[in-house]
Image 1 (tube, helix red, strand yellow):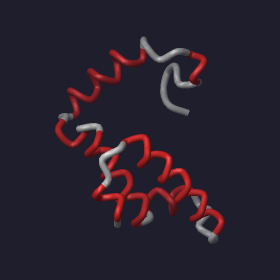
Image 2 (cartoon, helix red, strand yellow):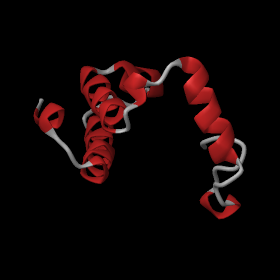
Image 3 (cartoon, rainbow, N blue to C red):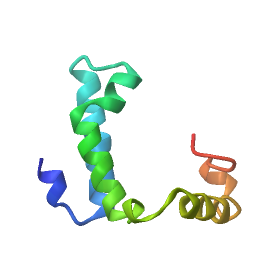
Length: 83
């Protein structure tokens, strides 16, 4: 629950990665099960908060996505959507 008090996006993302690994090591291996796990929901909520996503309406999010798609280098493996 400490994640809800976090203020460093990079730290939250790195911690989330470690938590996902720990879940898998403890038998939670199904992607859908991980996606709806309480811990994942808490981390996703915090990431949304730190990126101000909660304040964007769907149309504003789509506008940000379209603008960013042309800026993300292919070397990041994200051209045309996250992988």
